[in-house]
Image (cartoon, rainbow, N blue to C red):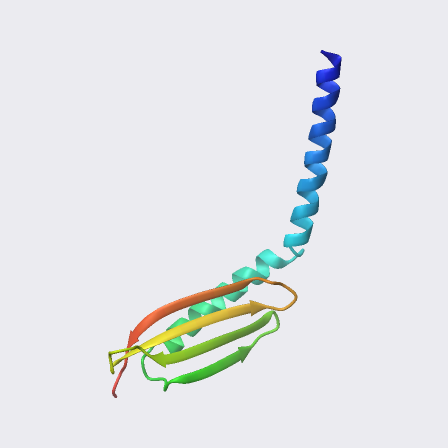
Length: 108
């Protein structure tokens, strides 16, 4: 019985150490706030670039936390629809947030 308890405690300690090491690799201290700011900026970009008035091309926006890349391309087979791809890349992280949508062109 004592051997089982000691083995369980050793296994629990190894598991706790490995779990704390993995979270230390994947999360920066402020990454939660940075992700929220990136999401908020992406939503603003969706409103701006998803209006259908922007010409096809690649655009970039620089921010303190990273960069947003916007690609607007014609949608295959439809002349009045654009494919809009927004990607936020965080500085110092391997994480990327990406949105894709189809937009009807506006001819004002």
